[in-house]
Amino acid sequence: MADRPKNPKNQGQKPPFDQPPLAPPGKTGEMSEKPDHGEQSYQGHGRLTRRVALITGGDSGIGRAVAIAFAREGADVCFSHLPEEAEDAAETRRWIEQAGREALAVEVDLASEAGCRKLVEAAVGRFGRIDLLVNNAAEQRKSVDSFEELDAETVERTFHVNVIAMFHLVRLSLKHMQAGAVIINVASIQAYQPSPAILDYASTKGAIVTFTKGLAEALAERGIRANCIAPGPVWTPLVAHSFDEDKLRQFGKKAPLGRPAQPAELAPAFVFMASDESRYVDGAVLGVTGGEILA
Image 1 (tube, rainbow, N blue to C red):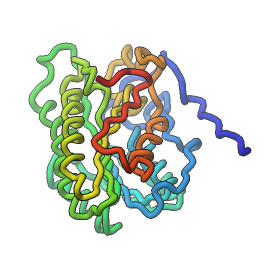
Image 2 (image 1 turned 135 degrees about the vertical axis):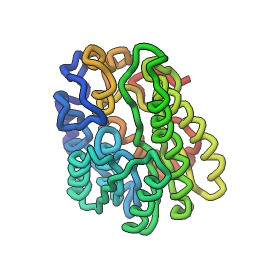
Image 3 (image 1 turned 180 degrees about the vertical axis):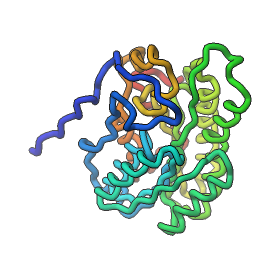
Image 4 (image 1 turned 135 degrees about the horizontal axis):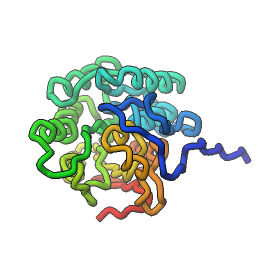
């Protein structure tokens, strides 16, 4: 029997963390406690051979972990990133290509319909179709101490990136998807246990759960499935620029497992939802929460 691969040293690490807050949107290279995206641990088994995946926010965090896993499962990957995230995007692209698959990184802001259209057109222009759409990109700004600090500009951008972009991306992608295609939306434990300090973000995650359930019913007759992953606390640059140093030191401590997930620990859930192994799963919300309960 082959030896079981060893976990990276930082997988399973518990707080306290020595992580100063980052400037948004947050860069992986600036994190003192580097996340594990499965670079050394994820092993593919051909579950997504010859598939074409479009992943939003694939430069870092959960998006990078999913991109690496999909590539090692046999998929070609197009992913989006912001201009400030070019360095992280190059690293994701390197890992996809190292897996022997094609990679396309698209610099785009998903806050507008034009940005969403640019991304879909780039993916189809390179690969000709979309088999897997992962709506992962999210806006989360600094946590606030009082509700009044949530200004209109911040709230509107959060909803544009986190929710409205999903409507655009799904609508624009459907003409390039056939029966057997899969849509995976990323919600959060925040949809069920909202934190007042990030209530704009939490509210979008609740909307994503509702969107996914209705979308699954709307597309079932076409043979296209839509499901949702709801992570608990995950150690990513998004987190590192959203909270102050005290909160970052104890991030994930309240989860029953006593720690945040590494992005690599989310990837298998996405592979399951994307593969034929979940062909009878539709309109579902899969929690990867470290023991926190989804309502």
